[in-house]
Each structure stands twice: as structure tokens, then as C-alpha cells.
Image 1 (tube, helix red, strand yellow):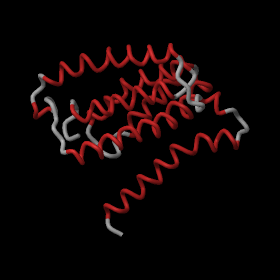
Image 2 (tube, helix red, strand yellow):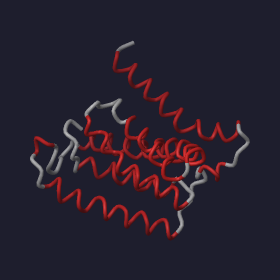
Image 3 (cartoon, helix red, strand yellow):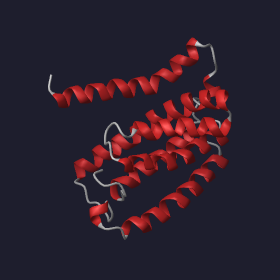
Image 4 (tube, helix red, strand yellow):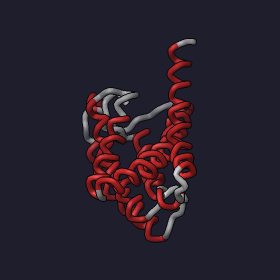
Length: 183
């Protein structure tokens, strides 16, 4: 089996685990999916919080990145049509998968064990560190900061849906504006 096929197979298995394990966990432990934020819903308050969070995050980042040197990852990207579809699809899928696992399952467990603030920091540090697997650049650890926003959205609203939307929009933004070299 070629390395490319093996890497994709491992990625697919990891994605399936991260998406389905939290639901399986709830069944094993006889716990409600709602307690983990795994019943997806979006209230009017949550929509407003997502929009405000995106504005405070992406507007300043867009301005900064537009004036960064291209060698640092700045400027507007112009991927091909097929690359764009591939990146967008992967980015949106990653939002569902990662938020279900990190915000739904892991954050719930760490908050229960360590309290809200410590639990959020621990689960968000693990979320940021997982991004080193695909690209071991230290810049990838910057995902810690939007991870805190996603954690707060889930914690405040009781559902992973607000964090999924925030995450997906940030991933779509990164297709054109990415301050991470080599991405």
C-alpha cells in the first residue's frame, strides 16, 4: 500500500473515531448526549454570539494578513477551483469532526474533572496540539486561540453547533487568508 493511501486511510479512521466515539461513549456510560452538547441546536443568542465572535476574530486577522509579506503566508490566496472545493469540503468536515470530539466529548470530561476554566484550557491545548500532526510547524499551535473561542461558544450555549459554525467559517476563511506559512 502506498504511503499516500495509507495516510488517507489512517486519517479516515481517525476522523470516524473522533466523530462517532463521543456518541458511543454516551451509550456505554448511559449518559445523555445533551449533557455533552451533542444534540445540535442553535438559539438566536448563539447565532448572535457566533457572528460577534467571527467579526472580532476575522476582521482584524484579514487586515493583518493582507499586509503580511507573502513569504510569511500573507496576502490573498488564489487556489484552483478543485483545490478550493477540496479545501472547503475538508475544512467544513473537520469542523464537525473536531468540534464533536474536542468540544463535545473531551471538553465536557475535562470541565467535569478540573472545573470550567482549567477544563477548557486542557481540552483546547489538546485541540491545538493535534494540528501538529499534519504540519509540525509551531505556527499550528496558534489554533489554541480560536479554540478558546469555540470552547466558550460550546460552554455558553450547551451545544457544539455554535462552535461548529465558527470553526467552519474560520476554516473557509483560511482558504484565502492564511497567516500560517506552509498551509
